[in-house]
Length: 551
Image 1 (cartoon, rainbow, N blue to C red):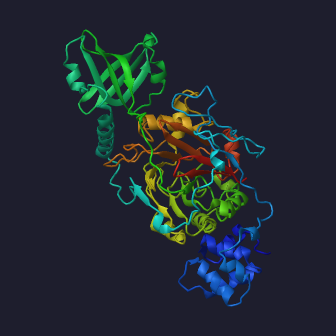
Image 2: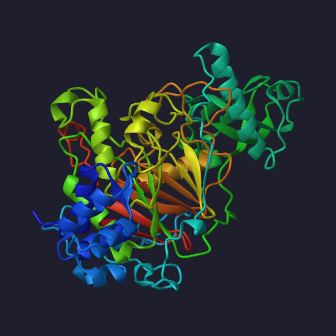
Image 3: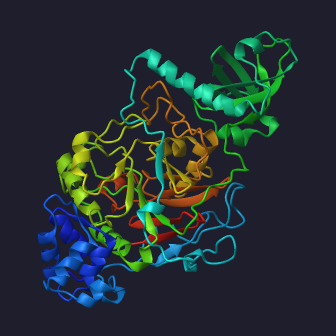
């Protein structure tokens, strides 16, 4: 079969154990006999080479091994690159700020989005204007990207891989929650005149008081009020929220074990605090995101699920084909938020839906698919709940055996969660298991699977990616609570729920990037209709985003 598309060339190189530079793939696609040139380039590559470079291809052409000498000399020729049959034209479906309806968005969102969630037609939705009134997808970069690695900057923070200290003993959990309290209460102390629980208990009745604590309990009374028990390092103290105070919406958002501040007045006997206001650590409305100083983009994806019967290989090939095209020249980073493979034993009867039953074979296959991505793309990956790491969060990056399987592309594999600073833009990457819990606990208008970004807003508001302990989200005790959002990110990127959603909360762009897996029988049984084959493409210089569909 002729190698007439970038994706097929990349796949053939991957089959032979190589990945390739973008320019090398373009040269091969433009050659008169791409198969012959590919064979020659591979033969001429050094024995220890892991990737095919443009120089390898040019050497093969110059030796007369086939292909188009003029195309190689000129750096390719995009006109000669044709798509594989059945490939999807990755038309941008939108350039959104939010998926909320115009006029009905909460205060923290900006604008509206036209992309329908879970649509089955595959037709692109209307474009959404950028903040300046222009269509961001139509903006041409001022300078042609040169993909010079010397211009790149990528730093990883909050990576706990290799730093796990927990043994599962009670004292470990105490240290984790003490660290959580200290760091989040520090944020809140600038907003309220905080007193410890022990000191409040000794204050005279009728005094004004404020307390910061972790939510030990929250329940409604027979009279329709709410009783919240807060705990700090000195003890516990109850706060009563009266139903006529207008705080019902705030109480609805409270989760167990999160850190909040309560201001109010002590009862005459000093036994309870009548709440006048409630505060979350939250993201300041004045947050100003960073930006790259050149036109460069990052693709945000998650939940590839290689090994599943429903892994969408054709959509993946269309995506990697597009990454090799001139249109994707600015895409120099790929940020993958977990679930690279389908895993084994994750849910009941999963073995009946597996195309690859061995977990290591799944990673071998994923590695082959990853080789189709241009070799000079910077890749950062975090694990998810389907990956071969511990389920309890924070999850360390993969062990050495799995890292060795995926060493050809030299991806950075870090913990879940982790913060990645990409050319001045801080991206908080978190797989997103706690989103299930947030959606289950909060009212539908504040968190739902159809609008996963709203659940992400709640995590930003709480400044913690998994605040509730003891539920579906398993938390590992560590000396440091790596799940605290201590520094405000510019972009918050999650996956897990297999739904596409995006929006801005206090100038933080929240993106849940969908998946690359069609609906499984298990998903049908729990009424999940996934958004599959999407790739949000983020402009790092403007933080505008274009969502492209490849399925």
